[in-house]
Length: 69
Image (tube, rainbow, N blue to C red; front, side, top):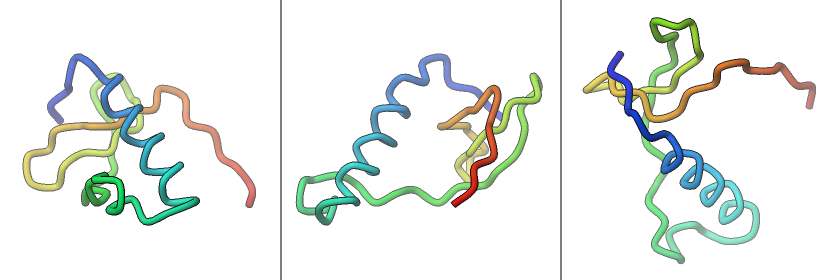
């Protein structure tokens, strides 16, 4: 998978989507729809979410943690 050098942009988008979705319709604020993605691991073993067409990773988790809901 291709890796993007600066992941801070993705973290901010994820936070914005989460907050907006909890209280309003994100589209009301010009926030784009959540993209489609595939899940996998990169060369370093990190969990990644990537664009299904290009394979470019847009979210990475070095040490993901399971949670109970």
